[in-house]
Structures are given as structure tokens and as C-alpha cells.
Image (cartoon, rainbow, N blue to C red; front, side, top):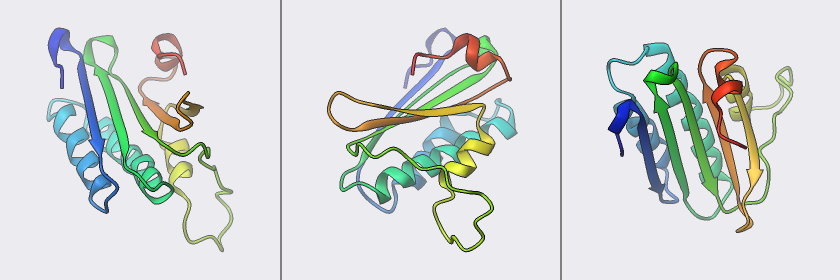
Length: 144
């Protein structure tokens, strides 16, 4: 974790375990701290949990989580989760009432400012999301 110059960075290697999402939630909440907008923290924790859970459920290995937050830059949060699967996450139909699971990316889509997925040269992928003021993500986002 680097907190120099007002920006916050977090990197975690999470093992393939049932506790991975809980560890990620606790780390994101702790790093964003008590002085950050509660709604922003709650949304970051929720979206992080959904993406880490997907990585653990749909792969045989763990994942890596990377988060950046710069309060001086308008408070934009970006979280990236890398895993070893090339399969892109699916955004299911929100009105499919027969479906009992698979709503994680729907939650991320509805909660985040924007999100996406891109392949890695290793064959895996990075699923990412951003939270912040509308328009801020477009002006300050890292390349996807």
C-alpha cells in the first residue's frame, strides 16, 4: 500500500479460497478509510466483492486485486481484478426472474460509473470498474 502524495494504492494476491472475497472487502474498506464518503466506500466494497467472487468461482486459481484512489483528483476509485481465465464476465438479463445466480456483473453495472474487461497477454483477463463523479472517469481513467 502506497499513501504518498495523497493517492492510495492497494495490491493483493488472493488465494483460491472461500475467504478471498471477504479479505478483499475488508482490505478495500480499511484502505479507503473513515474519511471517505460512506456511499463510495460501500459501493467499492460491493463491486470488489462481486468481481473477486467471480474470479474465485470461475477459475481454479486465485486472483490479484489492484485498487487506486486519489482524493485530490475528485475521489475516483479504480479496482482491477486479474485472473487466469480468458472467459469474459457475462451481464445477464436483469428481468430473468428464473435465474438464481449470476447477478454479480449486473450489480457492478448498476453501481459503478463504468466497468470493463480486457485480455492479458498471459491468457487471462482483467475485470475493472471505476466509481466517481460522472464525467470524471472519462477524463482521468487509466487505459483499458
